[in-house]
Amino acid sequence: MPPRKIGLYGGTFDPVHLGHLILARTALETLGLDRVLLIPNIISPHKQASRPTPPELRLAMLEAAVEGEPGLAVSDVELRRGGTSFTIDTVTHVRERESEGEIFYLLGADNLSALPTWHRIEELRQLVRFVVFTRDDGPTRGEFPEISRRIDISATEIRERVAKGLSIRYLVPDKVRSIIAQHRLYREPHH
View (cartoon, one colour):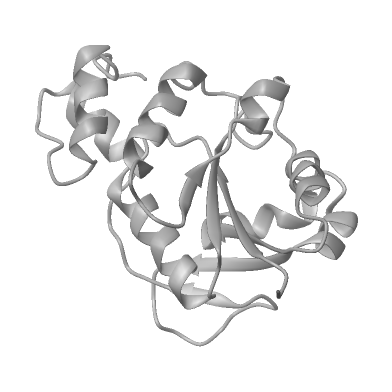
C-alpha cells in the first residue's frame, strides 16, 4: 500500500467560508491527496494584534462545514496545545501519526513572503512539501507548486457584512451561518 498523502491547511478560519472549502477540495483532487486536515490555530504568530473568535466556536464552525465531506477533516491539535501556533509543532505531531506519509502544507500566496521568518523554517522544509494557493493563472513565481483558483471571498468581508446586518448566505455553509447567528458572532464592527 503506498504511503498516504496528507494535506495540512492551517489558519484562523474566523469564520471558515466556502472559499476555504473550495481550495481544500481543489488541493485534495489536484494533488491526489488522501485527506486534507483543516487546522484552526489559537494565536497565529503573524496575527498577534487581533483577537479571533473563541477557539471552540471556530472549531465548531469548521466541523459543521466539513461534516459529510469525503477527504476533508478537522484537527484540533493546535487548539489542544494552546499558545502561539507554530507550524513545525503541528507538522511534527502529524508526522508522528503518519510516519510513512507524504505531507503537503497548503498556504495562501499572501503568506509566502513571510515564510522565511517561520519558526524553524529549514527543518520544516525538510518535513513537508509546500503548495501555494494563488488567485491567478500567471506564470509560476516561486519554488513551490501552485494551485491557481480565483475565489473572491474573505473572512474579513464576512465579519464586516455580519456587523452591518447584511446577508452572508452563499459565502459560508448554512450550518456555519446558523452557528454565527446562534452565538451572535461578528456583531461588533471592530471585530
